Image (cartoon, rainbow, N blue to C red):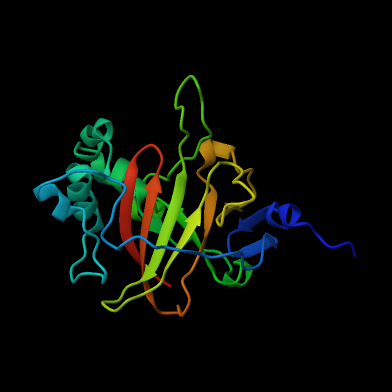
Length: 230
């Protein structure tokens, strides 16, 4: 059998249907290391608001992801143009909840080793599914997807942070460390891309039952933070 080039290897497509993986995607790919301090953000503000951008290292007791992300968003982590939406009557369901990660019901055996499958906007909680879109000169010059995901284990001790990058949608660059898959028997672009699964690298030392902090950046709507248990 002819050996695959790296570009061919990373360019395969996966389809996840319910709990069945229909086609393989990739095995473990390269894993980025986050050299940034855990409290650093892509948002840039000063004064009192800077403290509200700090990310918890451990999932707090009584964790409220909606309240935390709304406060952090108003402090600078979410673009000003989107603040009326997150603070409006549909803020929780259609805007903040839409940007929170969840684990889709797929067969774990179909997820590449050392990775996790993530989607955004859990319909089981009443949230709107997160759409995805490529750049559009008539609408959104940047496009609408998560261009990076940073994952660390919830712990007060030092922990490695794994970074996955996605420089394009529906097809990332071969040099990106993140990949996409599809939930169900759809095309990636069906229904505004709401069936897109993000395959993201896990830090080393993570095992079943661990709680992970997911910190991710939506090109259009800013940064969001939540915890998931695997």
